[in-house]
Image (tube, rainbow, N blue to C red):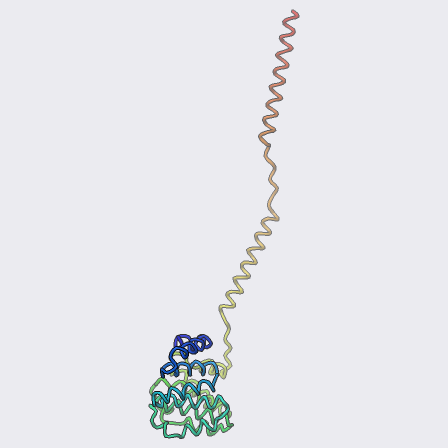
Amino acid sequence: MVARLIDEDPEGAYGYSKVALRLASRVAAVREAAGFAAYANQKYSEALAEFRAARRMTGGVELWPVMADCERGLGRPEKALDMAGAPEVHKLDKAGQVEMRLVAAGARRDMDQLDAAIVTLQSSELASNSIQPWTARLRYAYADALLAVGREDEAREWFAKAVEADRDGSTDASDRLAEMDGVEFVDALDEHEGEGDSAEAKAADVDVDADAESPEVPEAKAPEAEADDSADDDLVDDEGDAERDEQRDKD
């Protein structure tokens, strides 16, 4: 549940992680999941404690970069840089080493060492034309670092390269590139909704006008009235017959 919710509902993922900790706090995977849930909610001290516990249980170094990033989150970029130069980094796989480089560059920027951040990101992985899972994020970080020092033309070039590598939309490189090009996006859905409201309003006006112009329909003669007229005619006929009978008697 933590893995399922952590991107869309980090608070919900954090709640599930706390339940898992109560049930199985001695399982390394549970401690790791709890660490990532706390990290997603910017609870860096708690996340760091959980990552350290998971690392003690497994003896692995896979969590080293995210542990260093927790140090950044706690306002200790110097500690993150120390971890970037530790022997554990050499034990990381290629993805972990790239992640560590990203964390180190971020720590440099935290310390206002912008040029050093650019140098930190310059690597064989950045120069490679092959697309790897980390390529888009690495190019994006490099473009953002270039933009921070005012190298806009180079930044635009690298944002464009990040877009090429970002097949799953893990960055907002396309938005940053459009912003630099002065492109403004308009939400077409909102426009269509406005047109729908206008059409409904026009339809309502038509209905009101139709009601106002409807001619008055004369009331039909009630059936009861017709019955009364027929009764009056019968009464006249009866009176005529009586007069004729009376005249015959006189004769």
